[in-house]
Image (cartoon, rainbow, N blue to C red; front, side, top):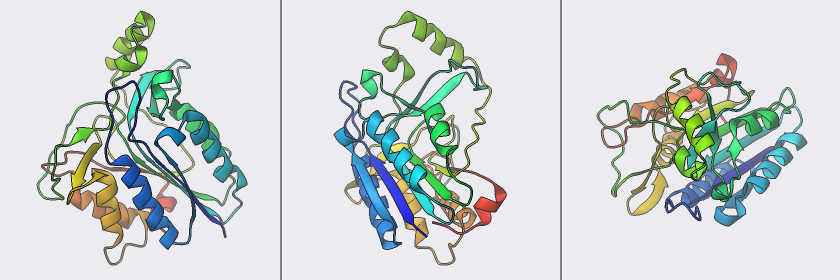
Length: 264
């Protein structure tokens, strides 16, 4: 059984004036966790994490995997969305992970991920951990949880920034903003997301070290005794998030069998 992972962390977003601080640390932390568990890990950080290299990296680990293998893909960086052009999204939005060159109109859309993930062979386990925003505003608060020691910052690039004054795209964004139906993207993977589609994932700092709130919480939760399944891990994460200071609601998507199956 082969264990492969790709960890992406992007703090530097040239041309956006919206750089982050904790994403490279997130990728390094995930790499350390996965290597301890026997994974061979490739990393893409900042300028190396272009759209081309992210797509190539994902295609390589998914395409090479055979039944029984386990794969992990982690992404920490900005998220955003653009108007859906092929009408396969009920919310009229294509969500995206923003690569380093996103301001050069280089996007990693949910459609791109769908194409790659659908090539996964039966019997290959693929875990996706996304610590980024997709859209929206804060909607839920609860007491308790971790406390950041610095100002928190949303990992979200506004779609209007990506439109760059193109009125046709701006009008399409206007229409999508007023389309409330939720996205129901189906991937043959187990997806851990840092927040709901209507929320932000936060870039912050703990004990003086920048991190994503979801990443730090999720990694801490792994050390809890008895965490052997994805569902148990998720339940422990949700015990800590959302919190009063970190109002984001992590999500777990996948089949019931995958949720109750072994963790990576």
